[in-house]
Image (cartoon, rainbow, N blue to C red):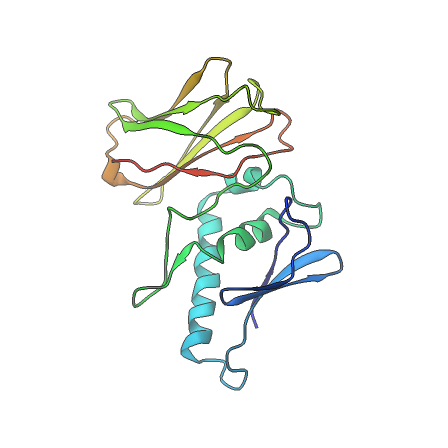
Length: 211
């Protein structure tokens, strides 16, 4: 039975079932286990699918080069960012409708926390790169102009693009990923999230589609 540990900072301890996974608590940590559909046949189609999903999400974590570690700062010290990433994405970020499971990037979560999710107002590919505009929403409690806005994208050939800036005190802000000549079809996925100035809190990531 495959397993990964998970801790949701907003819901605390977890228990019960979701999709093909079972959540339990052990020694103060949440543990996600893949259900054993047929314990006597460890190589059944269902077991193979479960292992493939775990492998996909685990490999996806590695492709972000550590930036997702910054996106999951609110879990307990005993809970690694890797386990939080696995717990956040195993239930819904894998598309199993085809012959082989694949990542559904529109549902992938690269950060998670208690800060309000960023509202994207525009996203365009320009001559300079990828330009994303967002609402600063400074009137929402616990939202500050000093918060750090983070945009991360991956290209089809595996390049990792990253840019950070302060949220700012204007009504809206714009952040640009510097990549002259890039095309929308070159981008595999793009996300925006915010962190508090001290890095102790984060928002759930916002998927940024590029047309």
